[in-house]
Image 1 (tube, rainbow, N blue to C red):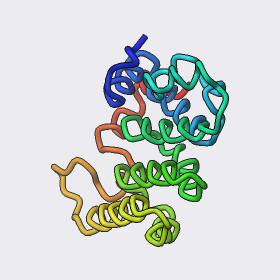
Image 2 (image 1 turned 60 degrees about the horizontal axis):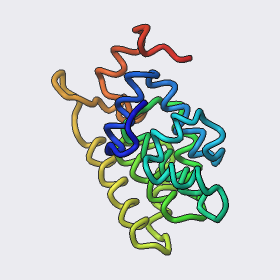
Image 3 (image 1 turned 90 degrees about the horizontal axis):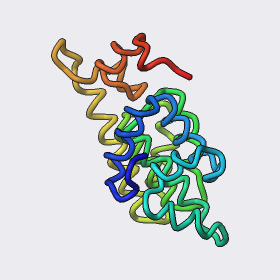
Image 4 (image 1 turned 90 degrees about the vertical axis):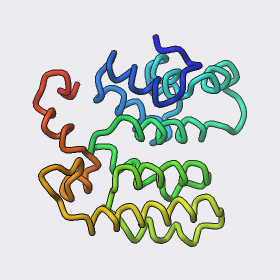
Length: 180
């Protein structure tokens, strides 16, 4: 079990080593879709929610279920599969601004250019942090599109659209990365 007090990146990476990237991405997308902590194994909820998740599991009442969606998006910053694109894009329209911001952070990190108009529309969001995240996402995608793919680059333009590094796609066929 990953200590809930570890930073999110460390928790997610440890969970990937223990359970595989497909499982962790599955937890993230389930949370991002709004399934809440009961839609994933308890360990998945604790990995993604950390010590704050422990508190929410202990007190399931209240109007804070959207935090699980924020934590699902945050997990996708550190574990990825292209199947997560749909839930990420859907989260851009969530009523809670932190979920929209989290989804935009994933769009930026993974350089997802699947629905640029939807991302651009977030530049008119009523919340400044969401507008800023949309601007960063668009700038990062635009920069990736301008950057020529070279033999030594870590992300080619074709991998930028799926959010995969070249190394990740090369490893796709290995048993440790098999989808479960």
